[in-house]
Image 1: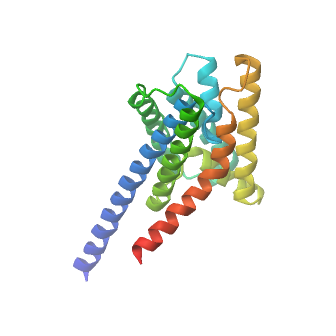
Image 2: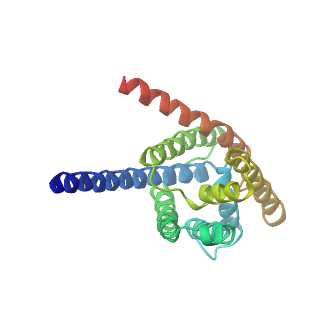
Image 3: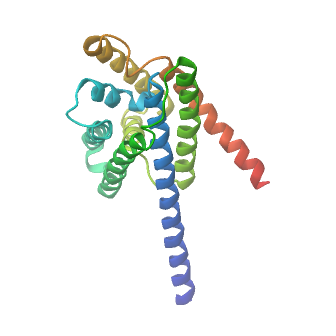
Length: 222
């Protein structure tokens, strides 16, 4: 009986490790997708648009560095809202993964630095590619099912405290991020730089791409 319990415990630990590895792979693929979106120059995904806009304004930190700071703010909001209900272990995991994501984004940007995107058709193609890569990364993270990045976890915390639907809160913040990025661009960059038509297309397209990957996976499993 004890051996059976030990065997089950080892199996659960191995499963958890495999899921974390899968999540980190998804995290890197998502970071690569964000890098492609910045290379396209048509605006990043709503979640990354604010730190990207700030990185264009200030060279104090890299894009990944501003992503890290943005994540710290989102984690702080969670702690302030949840208070005693806040899970310290989850916060630590979120912090580690968020900083890993920031560094992965910097690495991914350097990885494709030599890619030449000098015409609008090339920009548009690069943006579409970024949506498919980012969608794949997010889908793999869902399959890992072990953690949430601070932005999504903050939306969940607000939903828990307010009773509002998570989906509605996500839509609200996606729109808010785009508006903030647009205002920053107009005030400090003289135009829409961090957020453009690509941001709107990404907001609409990525969810549908994730659904597409799920359908393909279901067909493969059959």
